[in-house]
Amino acid sequence: MKEEKNKNNKRSFLIFAIIALILILVYNAFVIPAVKKAKIKDTNYSFFLKQVDDGTVEQVQIKEDTILFKVKGADGSEQLYSTIRVEDPDLVTRLYEKGGIDFTGSIEEQNPVASFLVSWVLPLVFMIILWNILMKGMSKRMGGLGNAMSFGKSNAKIYVKAQTGKTFADVAGQDEAKEALVEIVDFLHNPGKYADIGANLPKGALLVGPPGTGKTLLAQAVAGEANVPFFSISGSEFVEMFVGMGAAKVRDLFQQANEKAPCIVFIDEIDTIGKKRDGTHSGNDEREQTLNQLLTEMDGFDGKKGVVILAATNRPESLDPALLRPGRFDRRIPAELPDLAGREAILKVHAKKVRIEPDVDFNAIGRATAGASGAELANIINEAALRAVRNGRNQVSQSDLEESVEVVIAGYQRKNAVISQKEKELIAYHEIGHALVAAMQKDSAPVHKITIIPRTSGALGYTMQVDEGEKFLMTKEEALARIATLTGGRSAEELVFNTCTSGASNDIEKATQLARAMVTRYGMSSSFDMVALETVNNQYLGGDTSLVCSPETAAKIDEEVSSIVRNAHSKAVKILSDNVTKLHELAGFLLERETITGEEFMEILKRDNVPAI
Ligand code: ADP
Ligand code: MG
Ligand code: ZN
Image (cartoon, rainbow, N blue to C red; front, top):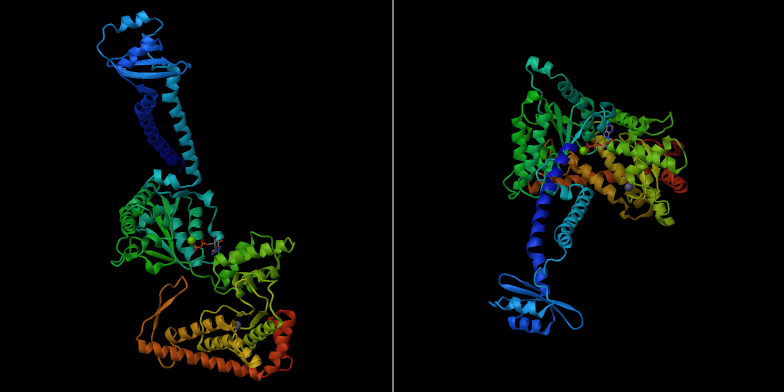
């Protein structure tokens, strides 16, 4: 893009030079005469004659219809006067006779070199300094004034292999996505193979998935593997202040791409420009024009030429249907949250970048991070490395990794938080309540760790459960067991202290969410059967839902949800009161240790062989 930039620079310099020239001319035509004029006093002819007679006039310049003359005061000061020229044939003789008056030269014109300096060189120097300041400011505020001077130019950067430095080997898991992209890379390498048989490759592929699953990374890997020019631009860069600018940028981008074909154009976060056009939001002309231009351009170029358009989004449902029809982004490449094998692989890819003990168990970390995205896993490895450095070691250990999983889930430990003994006891019973209820139900994941060290996220303690293997489905029994486990904390508070605390608010939220989903989306309630009562709006971003039912049904749903939670709660209370001695024993142990492992927990629990319920 260097050439392009130089061209831009030259053009803006030319514009600047023209403006500078005009300014200098104006300066010479108006400012200098005005300054000079200010120095000259107007007077009348008789004053002039009187001064000549008095002998104070030093110099006279007779012009066409004015007379300029310089008077030397008694104190030696000089003053210029101008007067109307009256028809007076004796004037010259008079001046001549007076003697000592110079009336042949020009008063105004001082030193020609000085006047040249003042009227031309000085303003020029000033302009050049101004230009330099402007240019510096421009390169500092990348794109600030720079953009203003290059209206409508796309700022897509060309990446070639060496620059992204990413290959498919950097992307772990995501095998389906890689497979689909490998085909595109192959097409760019041997388009003939596809043309022979008459196959057209998709013009565009849309990478969809939750944030942090490696969509941008996949696109960079394609660029690295394909070894063709790679234009990368973010959707938001098309959004301009002025209507039509975004469209101009799209046009420019595709023009460049056509020149460089075969090549790849990658539009990240395409939902910023590709939102559904609907009648309701009027007045967003700019975005619509940009989208229309994109649609036109995608139709316009020849699929056989080898321009492939990749785009990424985490809101595919908000995209305009016209973008998704065959011939445009007709291929959808999912980049989902990684499964257990995927998480292990991602951890290993990132672990290669840090020095790590050879016997680290990535599988255990993978199991403890169900639902984590690739970006979070990369972050876990980095946090672990930072922790190793903080502790003065030069290798990352298993415990670093385990601690950093908790950091990513719950924040850092707040070691110096002051918590009273009374509250500590409450927290310990609360956590053991969760753990005990979990352990006493057979459809519940085993307890991995319990801690009452507060975290920066605000959690005062937590119980970590880790499944043995990967779970893709949740049975009704598991869901109910989960809700019971969530109510276990509050149940322990009630049972032991005969009170309840605000510490259960998060548990309550989660329990209610799950119970509601059971009723409205999973068809797990007896009264509604398999009726969908809620739809998911944003499956990749939080997954918020909206109710689709009558108000009467909504009331019934609420009843159903609260009865599920109430039943789970009483089940938890029952489990705890049946095992109240274990509850005291475990809580005491946790209070003393602050953090206990799942094994320690099970060991104490099994000592007297409590019968499972
Ligand atoms: P997004 O899907 O939001 O575009 P990115 O591609 O920007 O996510 O991913 C962010 C970071 O997460 C990457 O730079 C990489 O370090 C890590 N990451 C995400 N997915 C993977 C993966 N499958 N393999 C390896 N690293 C990954
Ligand atoms: Mg991204
Ligand atoms: Zn709790």
